[in-house]
Image 1 (cartoon, helix red, strand yellow):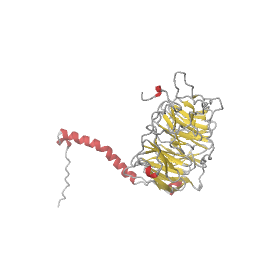
Image 2: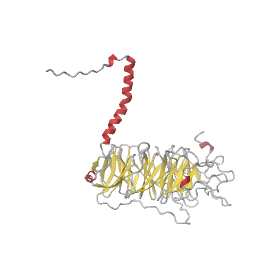
Image 3: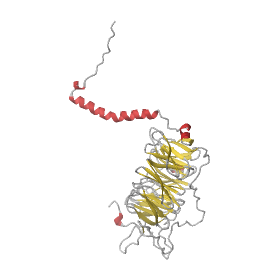
Image 4: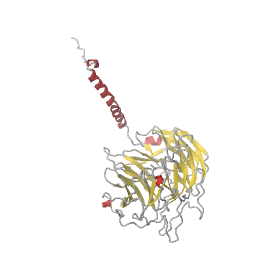
Length: 498
């Protein structure tokens, strides 16, 4: 008996006509990236996204809890994770906002903001409210239960989510104009200021100050609860991140490689620290230390009061949290990195699932691992059952109390500018200066910062849950009526669309 040898037939490409060979080659090149993604997905599918207790224990941690925000995996992703002390918020690109208890992972509420399927931008929170942008409308929700307080249109196309102080919601428009809406009176005319250049980052409320960067390299700083611009800072590079705050100082990172510490009251530069590389992520201030990651990558630790160098850790590109004896971050491969808090020496490293990343937490000692599928895990140091908070929940102002003018200059004198910071200049006689400080009230009591009464043709803001998704009339025109005062009226030459 003879075993028949298997016969295989492999058609030669040379037997195909030239046009067919070219088509086959094009098809192969087109399918190659899709095949690579498919096989990569198969490999990732075999790895659990959850950190096991055994993995965490090897680096001195334990998993406190994990949770899943509601996400339609086939249609949407989480675009923003936002931590505000005792709450963790997830916002999807279909407009769903979910609030979680940051200490237990319990889902507190989940709401649709705006039209279903439309993205929402933000959020920003204060002690009572949560603010978001969807379309060209500003939404204000109760932070505790997600109920709608009001919704109103903004003056033009918004460039980012809002920022909330105790009394105002600040919205940046693509034209560089900043608008401030009173939280307790949505029908009031908004305060506005026209800055130079456009802004694509949302304003930042830091304590009693509000700030926003522009594409011209300026950072504007003003009062948060009594709108008015104090001064502006210009660095040698662009400012592409939000500043950090520790009373009374602002910490500003720039692509020129410097971390600047600016006194928020006077505008004076306290110190500057050079990382040697561009900085594209926000600094974090924890206790007496300031952490900033440069694009080298490396994380730098400096004294928050003096700017003195403490240590740097090459290869660590992201700050995550600070514990009792360790600082936590992540490297460019997504691994969780454990550093000694005093020296910055690498203590341990833990691999995480593909797609997981650490959330910047300068508010407590908890470590949050998140992904865009809605999964969040909270890690803590072994035995640290009670969280350590580095920031306190701000108390809302007392009823009837006048708004504090944080950072206001002494009467009759503007704040002293820092090197690189300049106060608003008075306008020339024949032109209007958009950087001018507001003039003193007239004898008849006219205040350029006072909200003018709404015009008869100005639409009222919607207030109920039922009206959250209903059409809103066109917003009022940007220009005030001839007989109304116009605070900080921009000059005609500053129109970026000219």
